[in-house]
Length: 358
Ligand code: DNO
Image (tube, rainbow, N blue to C red; front, side):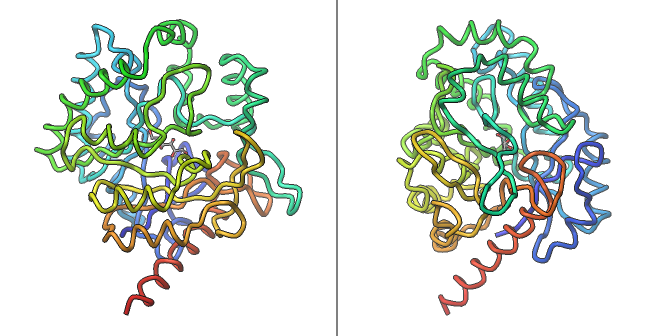
């Protein structure tokens, strides 16, 4: 297991590499280049500079997140081949720079979605990401985009890039006629082109679950249950077609048994990467993000870590979203302090599980 921390790059993150380097037991970052819109090629020299910077700070970077898939690929439009070609070039460029895992998603239009990016937690005055389906009902997709952008403290959130969202209405219209099965067909087409390339250059693709774990705004979504992922890994049956299991995204639905899902795919060696965080249920399709410590939320992170440990997980892991605590301001969900506490807690669980085995 390699414990890492998400980092957005020096112009897009209020957290520095030096700070990350000082978190005990953190060997590297899960990186990201947010200056490129979905469909654009990530140039080799830019990736190289990024990787070098991270290495100079004494950290590894073997995972890159949010290499976003162009909407035309997901919608199966005629020019998808062009965008798949670009994606393949990016995969090859990343591989040449030492990247081993690419985290991406196949969610139509939106990446993760919340109705409040800073809901105060009354008990302790911190705040965290929050979702209430009732609030969403009163919003159009456009309104949600405006609100999310306004409340992002000046940062572009992954999946909410302006270029990607400016054609929102046209894209939403096209999706009205796309079923989940068609979306899965388009996904298969994409995987059939890219997975052989990944195999040849030593990259594992790791698909991130839908967040929250149900369809939103009537859009088709194909990655939010164990059964969904069973289908996905069979679309192209290769270790290069793997998962980025996220306890919090899947855990937004109490119907998902999170430790069991981790164990199931761990046993198949199809978890290339894991995001681990906790959720507090507040009602039907209503939740907030909780501190990592199991008893602060509704997920048992000890059991999640144990499932990974027992199945011999040797991939990459990171604490996922944290609350904003100690008056920190920055990228919603991605403060330094609460995520660092989460990382330390997860490392503690791992150590204890390991020692108990002896
Ligand atoms: C949320 C993240 C996601 C993830 C993307 C991958 O905070 O886990 O944005 O990186 O879905 O494409």
